[in-house]
Length: 231
Image (cartoon, rainbow, N blue to C red):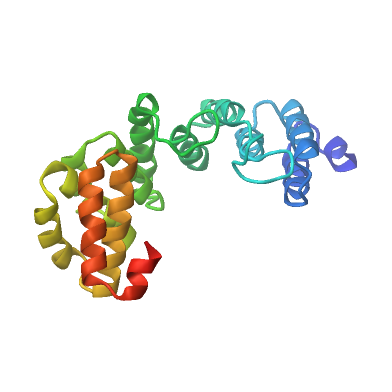
């Protein structure tokens, strides 16, 4: 507090203290300190963004556990962007929050996903590619299957990213066509089995149960006994 008093209008010390309290598991006190930092520097995007991050945790400092305040986090990130439209961390954080419902479930609420796609596209335009896979998954849940494959061609995606593409192919065309593509997209057999299994999990989230079941059968057929048990 002495540091805050010595530097009026600057929230750096208060936000650092709030983050330290969060790491210590003192989520309630961290929230109070984050609000205090916002009150000290109401025009600080960093203070608002820090408040959003803290509100994504419950009162014991656990990320997105019951008791996290995602609506409050969303509001904080929106305010951070209003204060600094170039704050790409706030933009990506808001997009991630929009993938969740108010209870914290990663349910990809359809009404929120168009905005999430726009935010991820804006982050990518700033040459930040860390959220490429998030962007693909959001497109998948919007059932923009052709866009998933098209955007993936412009990205450097690993096996998990390829799994999103495979899920889109299975949903758009057919499981048989997806399995043909899988060999070209993921050369390593172990990685390919993993990607197919993850694609099946995505399809379950999309409630494409017949396609998901077919992929799980394929993993069991092509994998070792350990792979089958892992399912």
